[in-house]
Length: 228
Ligand code: CTP
Ligand code: CA
Image: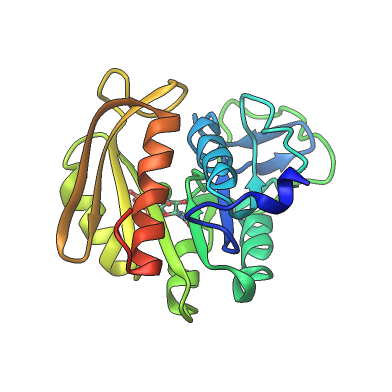
């Protein structure tokens, strides 16, 4: 009965969150991935649920087990391509999409069906660019609120603003992953959030749960036009 009464600033809203690092297969036992732990995306999924949203969490490789909340729809994916398919097929029904996942920029041109045996002293792996998921969604926008992340190791503001414009985002969350307490694997983050007009919110060292709440509050305010 309690569930019926649950309301929140995101009640009735469909939120999609992507988390973790994509896995690009070289062969059945080897892959290319990155240091994303999944923690930021998981925190966003939990916070969105706590604010009343209907949440779909699309998770690639993560260090931790995703939230086991039956109210959060969990979809496991591996590659950038499978993440692209998972988000685009749900895009029409989405109100807010938050792309916390670290998507590989390149994948092996050929993925072998059986384990590659060693041979010569050197080996070359040919890589090909993956589709930019956010950029694709940015072009397909039809009222959805689109949020990207930019993990940088310097010049975070410059790169984040460039990505915001290039990918047609509503907000971008920039963090400098070379700063202690920010970025991959930690339970905390230091972020600056930008929109097309410039800096919206600077968050000092905060838990990823707190960053998630503040980010979702901003998104909720902007889609409703009401200050929370
Ligand atoms: N992203 C994506 N699809 C890709 C690559 C990135 O959707 N193929 C998304 C990420 O999920 C993130 C945002 O784009 O929300 C920024 O990712 P980032 O790696 O910082 O930006 P890139 O555009 O890939 O630029 P670069 O890696 O050169 O900094
Ligand atoms: Ca990238």
